[in-house]
Image (cartoon, rainbow over all chains, first blue to last red):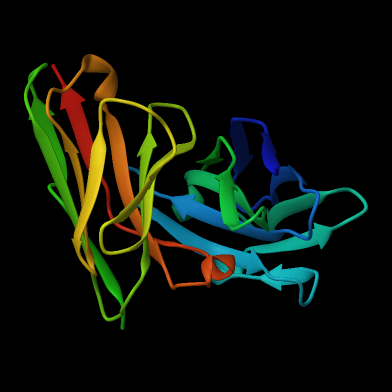
Amino acid sequence: AQSVTQLGSHVSVSEGALVLLRCNYSSSVPPYLFWYVQYPNQGLQLLLKYTSAATLVKGINDFEAEFKKSETSFHLTKPSAHMSDAAEYFCAVTAWTGGFKTIFGAGTRLFVKA
Amino acid sequence: SQTIHQWPATLVQPVGSPLSLECTVEGTSNPNLYWYRQAAGRGLQLLFYSVGIGQISSEVPQNLSASRPQDRQFILSSKKLLLSDSGFYLCAWSAQGASIYGYTFGSGTRLTVV
């Protein structure tokens, strides 16, 4: 079975600062990893995904994430935060366990200060 | 292009009343369909998924049921709502055999049971 842990339910950064949202996973088989963003009262939108190609994955709005197998991590970063980045971010892992199953993390709410 | 529609956007229902939430997908055939619930401050809980018409898998025993009467239609129902059914309900789809590429979510329904 797989699991996902997002470290920090809330993260606050200043506008223009680095954004770092942490995600660690557990999986007994090669995982597929995702980051989604959710704005208030909206559905989730896929930001980026790792599907066993390049370990550094680039997504929309200058977000990127790096798959580190040795650390079982898939942290999300953005060099410079914008006010519009304020939202909730979810890490997810999909793995084959007799069928593909997806588990979502509990989410990290990002606050951006002016 | 594929789109997913979910309605209504908000709903306030009294305890003991019935529920019907509808989700439809356009621009694709034979999708995998999912119902998730998101309680306040918590992650996503998978309620039901379907790989085809009339095929429903339940992840969590509860007061809710799901049906898939047509290929691209997924309905979440309850005969008698409980206070604990309040939450944000999200419908999602993925291509058959392609959940490793992520999900597309609807815009959600905010259900408040009073």
